[in-house]
Image 1 (cartoon, one colour):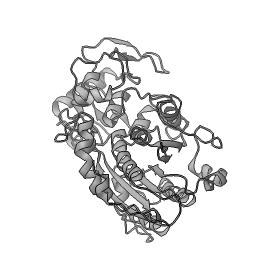
Image 2 (cartoon, rainbow, N blue to C red):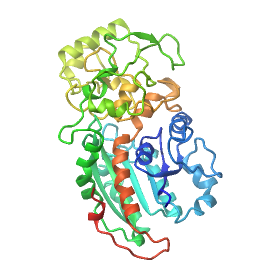
Image 3 (cartoon, rainbow, N blue to C red):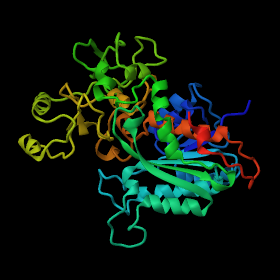
Image 4 (cartoon, helix red, strand yellow):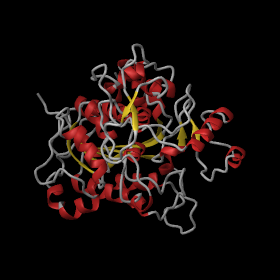
Length: 431
């Protein structure tokens, strides 16, 4: 039996994209993540528990590492992988491209895509998968010239084409793939031109959508709503216990019991869990009485699913611009790394980490490690649980992309010798 195709995950975060790839049959080689907090979550869930097929190389410590350090310190080892890796995947840090931020073309985090390309040039994998915010595909309105008049996606595309890849990209809506969150994401897929895979990945992806959702028990005609995703995690009418996984005393969590009914989506997230096994990260946020009163009024007076109007913000003397009460009957808007950006649709509080994870399509068995939140001078240094969840690629979207690329790789008799062509029609990959 042939070994499963292999991938490297750059800028892996806590592992949302890797989880999707591993769940769709890929075999992991290693992941690169600079945050020790995010990497501890990654290693705990995807490497140490032996649930998935991982072949971590002996030359790379299984711990956090910066991509620039990887290039400088392990360049010889990376060169040894040339032509032997099937896929490099990753989501370079995106804050400089995000429409929700300042869209600064000079943000140093934008340059992480350059490091992605450097490693691609060294390793020359057969396929590439790059994920980012939709702003990656929007031109900067800068004045300094250079490449600011075109979207950075086109700059990356041209550079990858120059080193021998056929490149396509598109903005994909996460909600179309069972994720209870709109979360439009820029997706770039590239295939090394000398291996002869001739296909239209995004046409094939769309054609596979119905079967993908039906196999997971989800309705392809209606998106998963917030209520369908997190209704079993409400605090109301639940027994509360001391939080069992918090490094700060005094917090409570629900005593979770699986609902007898429950939505199709909840059943999917609970798959592989015993009925009364509790997921972690259930700590209930603590709010002052006046904050709870304010949230209660907001839930009564403000439309669900829309950011608070200037009038509502002025009434409650809120300086924060992006506060959105969740709408129970629709997918959530894109969740961020800041938990106080959204309010529960029914209870006067911000969501728990586990509720945020459900909205991202992380299964309940997936544990998040580290502190729940940070602030002040530690905000730039630490990657707490809320940030890990907010930064992640939704695993269900990753799984859909993983299945697409796995099918292309395994259905094609890709030559191990450079230069041998073997074109395959995209029809081979459908179903």
